[in-house]
Amino acid sequence: MKAQPTGRAEGDSAAIPPALGIRPEIAVRAIPADERIWVPQADDVWFRPLLLNTVTGGWCNLLRVRRSGVLSRHRHPMIVVGYVIRGRWKYLEHDWIADEGSFVFEPPGEVHTLTVPADCAEMITFFNIAGAMIYVDDDDRQIGYEDVFTKIAMCRAHYRDVGLGSDYVDQFIR
Ligand SMILES: [Fe+2]
Image 1 (spheres, protein in one colour):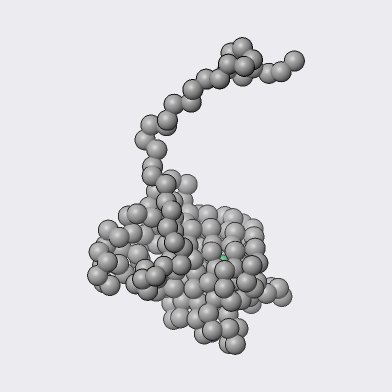
Image 2 (image 1 turned 45 degrees about the horizontal axis):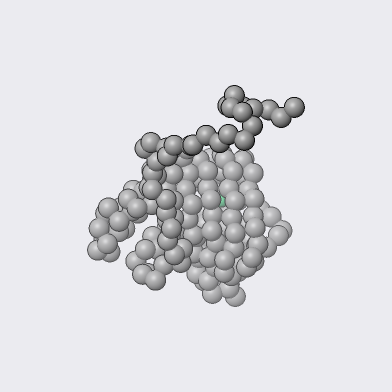
């Protein structure tokens, strides 16, 4: 016998009302035409915010590294997934190389240092990062962290400084 979760007769269909308080969707060109949208992160490293998720904590962005930029050694307490759009990179801690079209899953607890080979002029990767990034030294002692709120603060300061206005980041915050 078929289950009837709503108690309605088979064949009936109940209207599902629009959700109250739903936040607007986001649909943007991921690689921006305006260079100012890239937020500097470190030497030769930038991120482009796409979704700053303050509800469950996390963010989606593009990471761009030029020349031999390095993203400092860090630990992920929660899941990360990524998709390489352009170029290639590797983690010092692993043998594999992520190149254009690669999908990457990083398990909670993963510690790594992202580097781009010297012969790769530019890499761009989409990352969906849950929770936080905890920066650590070579002895795995914490030296810094990032979460959705520090990312928002970085964006605000940068967009203010480049003339887009500090509230430019608001369109990416949910
Ligand atoms: Fe990472």
